[in-house]
Length: 334
View (cartoon, rainbow, N blue to C red):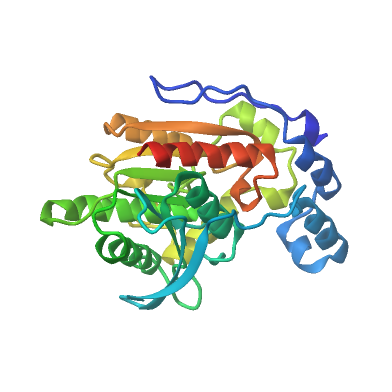
């Protein structure tokens, strides 16, 4: 049963990793995931019973509502490839911090209404008082390819730091594919800083997809992952499809597309949130080691019992609440 799954977190790096005891797949999710054993992504598109079970699986114990005191506004920016929608979240007219946040979705899915965009942004604004901007970058569809999504995120970063909140300490954050986009944006900002550009003072990376090929999990974790339904997994063919959609090929992938291949020195302090039951967890773990080697202050937090994309759920789940707390504490501390 999924409720018996257990893995061991990687050994902590010097002074870096938040040490937590691994746990079984979260019991609330395991109970609803068991009937979906063997279900594929294709089944979720065609099988009504699989769709019903999946709808139950993604339903959280309680509905989420916008935290009291958070004001939301939709804004459209001028970008190098056309208009860019952003959504702002604030609790005060004079915030002490700012954050640009990018949702995930394998570069091809997601929007500003996705929980990973709206729930995360609103919760971080409420918990820290920061001015949070969620960016609706162009997706890798209908001929859109790298570097267009990065260009959109970069344009939103310039707007945030140059017009919306000039002079306010600002961070970049994102989840999964969005984490790759904000990391690439941070690299651009680092390289522009010598000419007076604004570089982030913090990076928040949730279960980042930063490498191609995706690094392999260690044997123990890989064995546990085999117990999960296929639709929860990122097999090599799935990763290849994401990269082809985003870059247009799987050879000669530009270093900033999956920026674990880029030069990482000179980046600001970075906090990495890992999902325990996640094929992409190995990418976040490798990125931590690379950053540490490059002299970047970095630490990670393991969301125990959680699958990839767990920030698409609400803080009604204790481990989602804890993950949001980790990000919020890092943002508040600067």
